[in-house]
Length: 500
Image 1: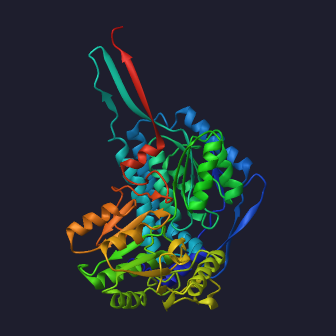
Image 2: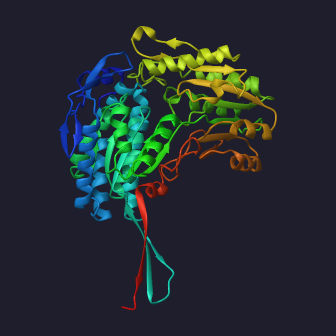
Image 3: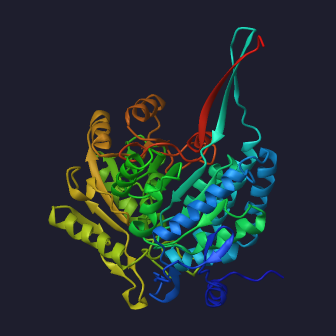
């Protein structure tokens, strides 16, 4: 009889799970060269989880050297795609075999509900690795149309050494979005997770070795951005740099990539996504529930969070009331309880930042109609109530800056043209949603909204077949889909004279 995975099960697993504390360089578990560490704290209750290596230039150099050696040897880069596929599929299988272990590490480290870790994060991570593995031996190069005495080949080759710097909100999924296509196309990778959530990256570094990925092909180093991330961005032997995180850091990394060796640099950055609701939405109650989930899922720590709710003034009052009602079922709870729908904010610093924006919204004249306070302070963890502001103008700070927390700004509009103008009045362009029964309007608005992903009568829909990325200061390049493979390869033209 299968064991019931209730709160007691997860609490017991949290007490017994082995916390990974070693970096992986050249296939070996190592500590930082300096011996320095930083303290990994659980946002659930403030408990100390482990001391994690705090890496620096010397460690980045060692990881890049290992990756370069592996790449140049051809042990992975020159392996047939079908063989890389087999190894990566085994890697995906191992992720699923260790699903509970990875889920508890993700929740302990980052604070998200265990139900989300098990149902979303771990399966999505394995699926991403598997999808890219399955794709790689089905992607063809090109033959140019030429004179019969010539042959023109258009081929793609792996970049070489790729540094991947990933965020703390979806540690495993974001790592997989980089590792899947980078490894499938034959690159060697140095993965640097956020210092706020390093644990699952360390664990999958070992699982990759267990799957048969050769030593040096995937290296994992931990530490702070300035100490461990910047040396990778500036490294003269890194061929590609990929990043997910804030726009400010993304801009900085773009500059470092440029002034070093002009490495290929792709950044997926912030968002201030508009969720636009017209009076003819097919189901206003469903749209209101989607609006609540769209901002409060993962504690609002989502780059595509629907943080600006644009509602036609004809329905605004009743619609916001429905959103407030939907938010009642999304209150913070213990992250190890499978019934919890909203967990802890990642750390004290982020909680203070979010609460600072709440204060700023009030000071600027917006009205709190739900939440607005810290929750569960007696736990020792970091929790915030789902917070909804009405009477927001798009010029307010809470409508312009990415908060990265459970804070929703409600803005009214009177016409389709005004809704589009408000939606586009932002530095960002990551995502948007439109709720309407009018097919012509859906097409018009989706074309005019400047965003990399637009959902119609959905919020945050899609799968691995669709590319993900943003317009404007939300970044460049695309994750997911076959388009992601382009970031990790160089295009080569070979022209042959067949007269000889």
